[in-house]
Amino acid sequence: MARAHTMALPPMPERFLRDVWQQRAFNTSSLTTSDGARVSVRFPGHVNPDGGPDFTDALIRIGGVLYRGDVEVHVRAASWHAHRHGADPHYNRVILHVVFSPPGRCPPALTHSGRRIPLLVLSPHLDPLLYRMWVSGCRGPVRPACGTDRRSLPRAVVSGKLRTLGVRRIARRVRMLKARFRQILEECEHERGICPRTPLHAEEAWDQVLYESVLEGMGYGGNRSSFLALARSVSLSRLRAHGLENTATMQALLFGAAGLLPPLKALTEREGRAYVLNLRRRLRALRILQAESALAEGDWKFFRLRPVNFPTARLAAFCFLLPSLFAGRVVNRMLGILTDPAATAYETRRAFLAMFRMRPDAFWSRHVHFRGRVPGRGIALGDARVREIIVNAIVPLLLLYARTEGDASVRRLTFALLRALPASQGNSVTRRVQSALWGATLQSCSHLEHQGMLHLYRRYCIAGRCPRCPVTAGPAPGTRPARRDRQ
Image 1 (cartoon, rainbow, N blue to C red):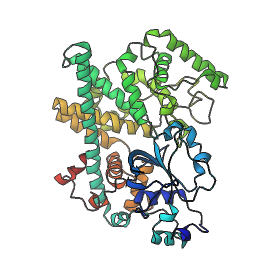
Image 2 (cartoon, rainbow, N blue to C red):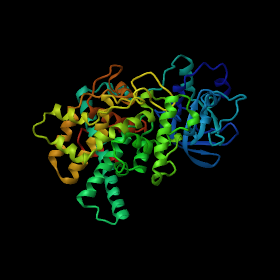
Image 3 (cartoon, rainbow, N blue to C red):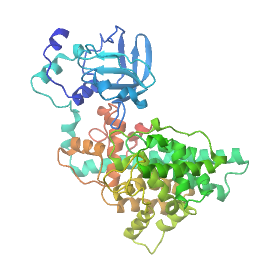
Image 4 (cartoon, helix red, strand yellow):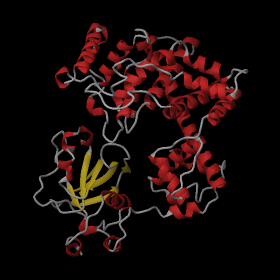
């Protein structure tokens, strides 16, 4: 069978091979690496839609040792070198390089840290039926079997279930913020030796949680965890001590801690060199705050991102947002906007959007990083992204506040704010889910439905839990059995 599969092979797109790996559509009983080590795939990994390896957190036994890490899939082994993965630290956790074609004289794949990666050639182990389908002309990606079943469901029924899943996803976010809020209060008591239940320190904790949530929400393409780590390493109170309106100092502190200030010798543009030099001088002037960077440039992902979504652009935008968004006690200000009895739903929505207005300086109006200009509008935040931050950061925080204070009116008004936001434009994940639900015709969906699609995709689709899908086979919205996905 191996010989038949390895002769005169037609070109195979990488997306097909990734689907084959994800669904384990190959003979798993006799897998070996190119140097003869036995391979057992316990878990193929989570699909990574962003920059970096194709699959993350895979569980694979190689030569008697169980490894947890990432998997990179290529049609040819030479693609590892052609794509320069060996120079990218984001691939340091790769434990297996899966390819379709034999490597020939291709040198072994090495990580940025110099570790050699085992190679698995998949073509001799492909499922015969799948291979015959491929060579006979069925060359599209492997489709989930649930797609056709879902399309038969009425739009109203699916929308209702998606809204239920959306509420569940937001509730999960509320629980995460609640745990972080308690942690901040405990840290306050431990470090300062004061009661964390005083109103002043409770307000500081609320503001810090919001600060972390908004900065995390600035992350695109796998940068959310890095933005969250940055927010926890440079607290809001630390920034406030130096004046949020001093944008240059805010940039020095945050870009310095993020490890995103490049060395001057790496900059060829005069304007970029002068800007970075000024930030470095400000950072040196704050000698009491000088320390090693909390993060490094390798912790950030730029690959497969539009320039406006580069972490440098998002962090710069956040620095210009700080004065308008976090001046005073921001949570109290948001509660005032939310509960204003004279404001209509439209006026409330506009007031929240106005909190994200900013005016970047001349440099960031023309740049998205320090290494030169790029065509476009600079670092401006689009309305769609602002609405996503409101949904993912502000709405869960207000719901947590309502739960903590036992204020039913705040909860009711928060969901009214959510309904008042314009329909979500969605992203690649929601478009994929919509394609499975309703075919090629994309539907406009509310932000709550958008959240439900994200919950469905991450908790069921890519986890392989299709038989328990709450859309096709799940219970009616609001019933108790749906709580199984809270782990």
